[in-house]
Image 1: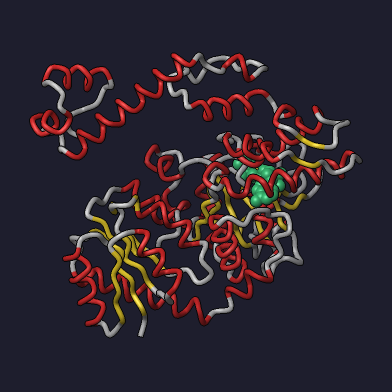
Image 2 (image 1 turned 90 degrees about the vertical axis):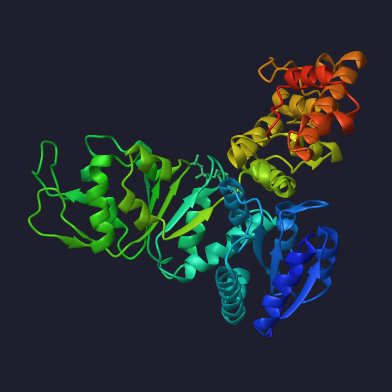
Length: 471
Ligand SMILES: Nc1ncnc2c1ncn2[C@@H]1O[C@H](COP(=O)(O)OP(=O)(O)OP(=O)(O)O)[C@@H](O)[C@H]1O
């Protein structure tokens, strides 16, 4: 018998889901706030959680990282009355098992629950936890729930021979994770062949991938094995797979299906037993819609997809990453490891890191150059644009134009009190009006009654803040 917790502020929903759960011979419990639900998950052995999104004390999706961080995290089924595609995507990316609407049929809810329970049972029986423990990932730094769940997936991928697609913004570690999948797989004794599809010269791309025989074209002065052949017995890593020329995608799809291909100039086919890992920072589905990436190839390469989070989505890892790369850079340049002032990490955490970990490494490099002879790193050693973003956040000055040129000294951008007060006031007013329209569902009469504003004043303010009546 499994234990199911329903976190929902609607008592009717709690009642009917509990009935359904008991009908399936499982134990059901309910919590009507996120806080109460979290306490129950921490103190009881919950197998599956039905989690509502709009709760009186917050958004259900926001507690997913906390749930994921628990030692024996339950499987989470998001149940919502306000389904939307972006919310569903976010829920799945944050580790939820499934996403269903409250209006779903009983059959659909039963099915989602049965599947989640079956998965949990198999997960407990499988040695995945041991594999994760034994995983060689000494270069992958981070202990956030997001990275732990990515390492779980690396372990799953390493145990099988399935094609893997790694997605994520630039600099999030796609190549590093591809390497980890290879190193932990049964193919680790053979090569990991890296192909940067963005750097393949148009004229040589086929020859580089498939190889050629001597004399098959001008300049082919000897037989040459292509990269696909070199990956025989190992892993072929296609980086930036979205850049693979459309003209070549069909031929590559065939190679993926058959694991056989014909080098240029050859009459016969040769075999290559490789495992494919591909990576991209582009949206391949949109490319399929635009006609620049083949749908059948996307299906083939994305049998198992690993989404790497952007660094700003896992701020808990910034400190460890900065320390790790700082120590590494110091070792490389032969200087003693640096200490850190406590506010150094606060400034790093306030920055948005559009270039992700690669940008963090470059930043540490620049910082170490600035502090070469000093034993401790302080925020003043950081590049100006990073300190400036932190200062902007701390003064909560939302109307400063984003593209304003960074200056070198923090006090230059510290606003006068009058400006600061006005900015906070405007922000509060805007938030109030947006919430007012939200709770009254755009009903002006009701909004006037609650706010105490006159009709014309309310309209003026809505216009000023560009708030629509129906949100
Ligand atoms: N979790 C991590 N721990 C430590 N270092 C990391 C981590 N993730 C990435 N890095 C480092 O960040 C740098 C960029 O990583 P990588 O090249 O794997 O990113 P990428 O996603 O493949 O980038 P791109 O899309 O631009 O090719 C590398 O030096 C890598 O070692």
